[in-house]
Amino acid sequence: MTATICGTGSYIPSYTMDNNDIARLVETSDEWIRERTGVIRRHIIRDETTVSMAAEAAKRALEDAGVSPEELDLILVSTISSNVILPCAACEVQERLGAPRATCFDLSAACTGFILAYNTAFAYLNSGFGKTALIIGSESLSNLTNWKDRRTCILFGDGAGAAVLRAEEGTVYLPVTHSDGRKGEALTCKSRHDYNGLSDGHCRERPQDTPDEEYYMQMDGQAVFKFAVKSVPEVINEALELNHVSSGEISYYILHQANRRIIEAVARRLGEPMEKFPVNLQEYGNTSSASIPILLDEMNREGKLRKGQKLVLAGFGAGLTWGASIIEWHRCRTNEIK
Ligand code: ACO
Image 1 (spheres, rainbow, N blue to C red):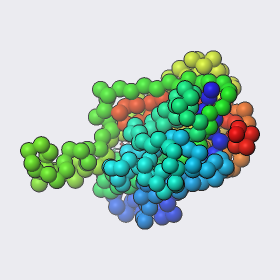
Image 2: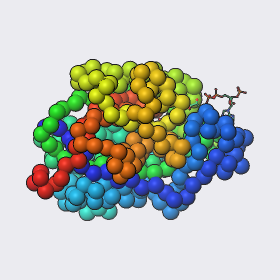
Image 3: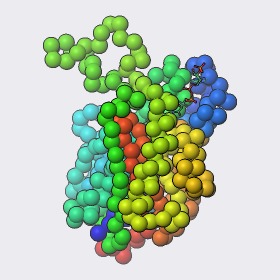
Image 4: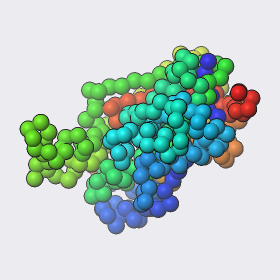
C-alpha cells in the first residue's frame, strides 16, 4: 500500500511587502536581496493566523480531491509558528473542518516539516492505520522575524499549503531523512520556551536587559547555506539509489524554497537542468514548512503535473534536519477508490 496525493490546496495572505518596503526598515536594497536570495516580495498575515491559513488551505485541498472532511482518518499540521500552543493546530483545523474521525497532531521540524508530515502520513496509510490523510504546512514566520535584523528579515514570508493522501495500491518509495542536533545553533528561535513571564522558581522570567534579538529567529546564514548545498544533493541521491530510481526518471525536484542560489547549486551538483527545479520564492520568500505544498499546489493547478510522473520532494532547515521523498503523481478519483 502506498500514499497517493489526490488533492492540493494553499492559502496566501493578500498583504505583500516587497524588497523596497524592507529597505525602509533596515539598511538593504532591492538589488542586494534579489541577487543574494532571489526574493522579490513576500506575503504577510494581517487578519489571518497560522490556524486560519491551515484550515483554508485544507478546505481547498479537500475540494480539489473530492474528499469530505468526515472521511479523514488523520490530520497533521507541520508548523513552527502556530498561534496556539494548546490545543494543537491540527485539532483546531479539525474543529474548523468538521472531521470527527481524524486523529490530529502537529509536527515541528521547520523547513523539513512537510517532508516529515508526508512520511508520517505515508507510514500510517502504508501500515493500514487509516485510509485518508490530510497534511498541512502553515507558517506565520512574520511573528518570529526580527524586523530590525537585515540578515533574516529579508528572507521569510507567511502562507499555508495542504495535500490530501489516500491509501492505494502502488509502488512504495522509501524516504530518506536525517537530523543533526549538534548543529542546532545554526538556526534558532528561543522566544516561547526560554521565558514565559512566570517567576515561580521553575520558569525563567525574561530578564530586563534581554536584547530583542533573542526573541526572534537567529541564523548563521552562511552555515545554513553551506549545509544546504551539500546535504540536499546527497540526500536526494540517497533516496534515488535506495529506490533504484535514476535522475532521468524524475520530472521535477520540488525543493524547500529558501534561496534561489541554494536551488541552483543543488541542480548543478545533481547535474540536472534548472527546468526540473520549479521556483516560486520570488513571490513568497521562505515560508518554511509551507513552501513545498504551496509550490506543489501551484504546479497542480497550473496543470504542470501529469499522471505517472515521478517527483522528488526535498526539505532542509533548522534542527538541523533534511530529507527527500519520491512520490509518483497519480491524482486518484475518489469514486474509483470507494
Ligand atoms: N542587505 C545588505 N547587506 C547585507 C544584508 C542585507 N539584507 N545582509 C547581510 N549583508 C551584508 C553583510 O553584513 C556582509 O557585509 P560585510 O562583508 O561588510 O560584513 C555582506 O552583506 C555579506 O554577508 P553574508 O552573510 O556573507 O551574505 P550571504 O551571501 O551569505 O547571504 C544570506 C546571506 C542571504 C542569508 C545567505 O547566507 C543565505 O541565504 N543563507 C541560507 C539561509 C536559509 O536558507 N535559511 C533558511 C533555512 S530554512 C529554515 O529552517 C527556516
